[in-house]
Image 1 (cartoon, rainbow, N blue to C red):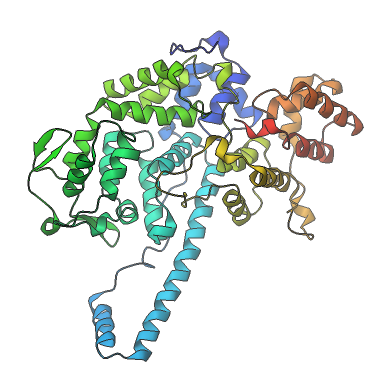
Image 2: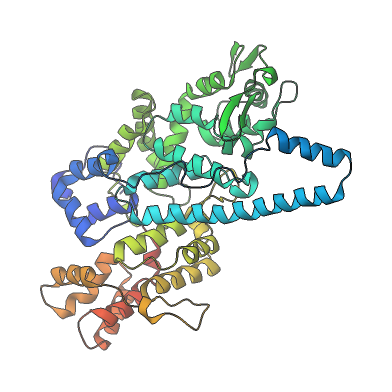
Length: 497
């Protein structure tokens, strides 16, 4: 029977299994030494250590880290030259203008790939994993895609917005997303004007970002919300309120009448109880259980308790997640190993947990794309569906190949490979196995599975693996350990978190 209690987990229930579960879900996994460190902190200390990451060092992010001018607007002189070329039908000048545009397109696509690699590397190396995990959550919640926006710097700015507000106030984040150039462009609000309102942002704000599909609003509320958002646009890299294009006349949104603007619109929908419940259901699926139909009516008491805490704390996110990560329900056996690793989770966790080298970041980004999750390129405004959609016959094959590539350095699509990349320092993993076996080699197979798998392998697979380890004729070290890891990571259980 599922434990639905939101009471805090006791110290007597806190062990390596529960600590690893927390590290997997509130981050991207970790080494056995990191798990042991969380065990020593106790449940409250471990949760606070991950959530209160502001006190931990982090790589600084500069606004000049990437080129902001690739997609800059034309200046007055350039605009005049374009107008003159078109007016005089100067084919040579127009061809030169088009060539420059094509060059900028190419440069921006290359920079988009660099931004992808930058964020993936940050997730792999960060000492503040929960910060990056929440940034990933918001990226899927307020989903925008580079292919539509075609401005890599704006995607970079939005990524910083999510990181700065990772565990802050949800209401404030909603207000800021209404001023985000990437979001305004993605949902066409930069073209929304008085008399010609575009409904995209208003619709998704209600349907996907705040209230949830069909909750509390009507089509007329969307139309009125769109009017409230007219004039919300951007210029270059900054938000701009175009008062001349804003519809300042009276509107009725969710029964409230006034000369509302976009901020008023957001405030009105955030005041509804449905908004807290919708967000907490999303948080539950991301951090607790994303199985079919979850969260269901049975665990509705859990999400309602979280929503009540969210309202009580005036939409501050951190207290809600502290409540969740300390709860007995979070550590219930029904929720351990109940989530399928996303492609990004699979990639980053394999590296952080096993201590393997990251190899080539471009290859890793290509692999996550093939597995269905390309950073900065969600499939649509709904983001990634997650859950069982991550697994099918083709993606499972890529998942297995990715693990082998990270462990051995061998790419499945290449015959030649750098043998120097195959070798990595397995000392930490060997030490973790040794500490669990007390020198008994017959226990090594079980120890390795316990370290690597979120849930027990089936009895049949466990026995087959133990027999395989016996054929290696020696302790699980060096090449023998690498061979064993290739087999463990091919197990279905390895796909679970």
